Length: 204
Image (cartoon, rainbow, N blue to C red):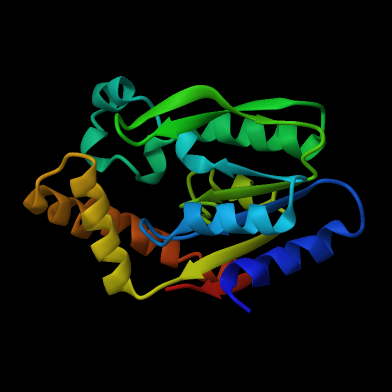
């Protein structure tokens, strides 16, 4: 059974009791969170929707104001209160909920790009810091019903990151520096949360 099928089966079993299920997929930068979340949602059918954490990046202008642009992707470069508010609204099942998406080409959040309808009984949330337990992020895991952490060969993950950064405009040297600098610092924080995941999912 591949990782998507394994997690989908776990989520489906959890949803058998009725009520909405929030399923979290955490992973290091470049681990394949978006791809896995999409595959899990497809396996679960039309009742499932994906909610990426990336939409809660702070806008570029705000990061510059705060002096954090060179650390974009770190825990304090996200709108954590906004993320928790959306998760809480989804958790309480109070009706349709709008959430931001993320445009990778310009690296900016897109307000209202995602709509979670009452018919979406399974919400697959994917993001770096779902299992982080500091600076307020510990509130996130408590809103999720089941969580998984992606495991992947670090060499494959880092090469994917370098390729992605180049595709979105960085030079080869800048892409490598970012992947092995800020991205790797964030990856270390994410790995520290491994023991808080309900399950580990190996991907390649």
